[in-house]
View 1 (cartoon, rainbow, N blue to C red):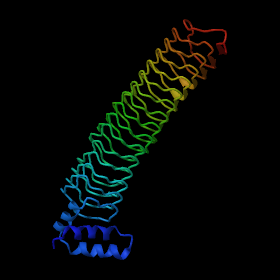
View 2 (view 1 turned 60 degrees about the horizontal axis):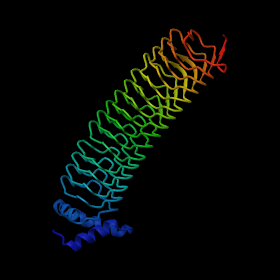
View 3 (view 1 turned 30 degrees about the vertical axis):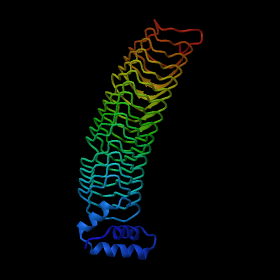
Length: 355
């Protein structure tokens, strides 16, 4: 039964109604329509906001520029559909099939994608602020310049994804997998990355300001030039991490182990190294002024030319460490062992105990 334009609009009004009886009337009409008529109706009426389309088959349908704000599309088939330039704020796409769907330049703020099939979905230029992508499989996706303030990527898989310039602050990315993701210039400031996997990421200039990285796997992460100011890295595997020329003002590094840490030129004033083992660390020329080092193992580390002025070192192991040219003016060293201080720069305010 083909519907006229006015009948199509009436159907949408019934489905959107706040009156339960009216909505049931709309559903009754939907039940007698063929799938072709339903699809024709939905493709013609541009404003589909606030209606329940649970389980509907819209595969391959052209819905470019449509409004589906607050629309319920749970378990819907949108595979291959064109929803580009559409407005889907707060829509529910739980368990929907979005494989091959075009969502480029869409407004997807507060959309729930939990359990959705996102294979081959296109998200270029989409707004994903506060969207729920819990458990999403975005492996290999091109998400460069993604706007995702407050996005939830808990347990999401972003392996080999391209996130150049993406803005994901201050999202909940707990247990997300970023293995080999390209995050150059991305912003994850204030992100909570508890138990997330950031192994082998390419993340030059990545912003992790105030980020929480507890039990976060950072093995072989390339963070050259990254900004980790006031971030916390706690009990995280960091073997092979590269912090060369990174900025880490006020960062806390606690309960970590890594041999031959690459951190030449690290800028980490007022930072904290606590209960950590970093033998062979490369920290030449690092700015560590006013930093706190407590129970830190720097055996055979290279601290030549490092700025340790006004730093506080307590119970640190410095056996074999190269401190040539290190600035220890105003520094305090308490119960540190193995330090060869010849060639260091000291003044009357340098305190070493015991001598």
